[in-house]
Image (tube, rainbow, N blue to C red; front, side):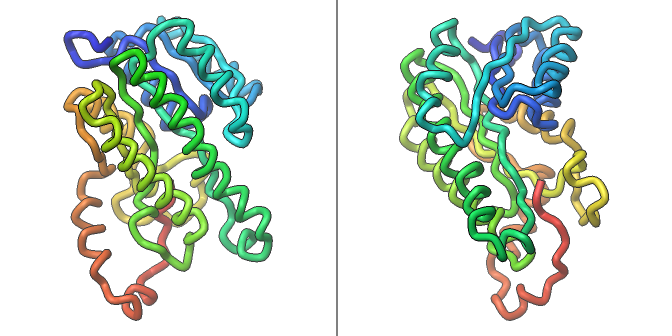
Length: 256
C-alpha cells in the first residue's frame, strides 16, 4: 500500500536496467519504498543495478523476465505477486531500433513491434490482473511523445509506442473503479546512454526529471503525464498541422 506521503511500499520494474526505471526506483526509495524487484534478462548490468539500489537501503531482488517470451509472463510475474503485494509496476522496457536499417529489414522492424507493443500487452495484462486481484496498485506505462503522430524519422518506433499508448489508455478505462491506477507517461527526448551523441532537440529531459514526474503522478493519481509538461501543448498543436507542412518540419529526435 502507499504510505502517508503517497509513495508505494513495493515496486516492480519491468526492464530492470532502464535508466528511467532505475531513476524512478531511486526516487521512490528516498521516499521510503522498501521492496524493489528488477525484472529483465539475466546480466551483469541487472545485478549491478540491484546492488546500487540495495546500497540505498532497499530490499532488492532480480527476476528473470523476457519481453519476447509472452508464454512465460503469467508464470514469471505470477510468482512475483505470490511473494506479496506489489504497490506499483513500472513497465519500462523497450527498444528504439534503427529506422533506416529496420526499413530494409522487416524482421528487425517486427522485433521493435514485438518488444514495445506485443510484449508490453502481455506483461501489462498479467500485471493488471494481479493488481486487480489484490485490490490496489498502479501500473505505470512508459510511452513516448513519438506515439502522438507518425514522423518519417521514426515511424516504426513511433507506431509501436502508439499501439502501446492506446492499449494503456483502454486498460486504464477497463480498470476504472477497481482500485488500480493506470498511468501513461509520455517523455520527449531523454538524455540517456542510448541517446548519447544524438542531436538534442528542444525540451529534452533527464531520467531523473522523468522519474520525478512519475512520482508526482503516482501521488496525484494522474492518468497521463507529459515530460516536460510543455509537450502537451506542443503536441496539441502538431496534431493539427497539415501533413504536407508536417513533412517539412525538422527531423529532430523525439524518441526517449
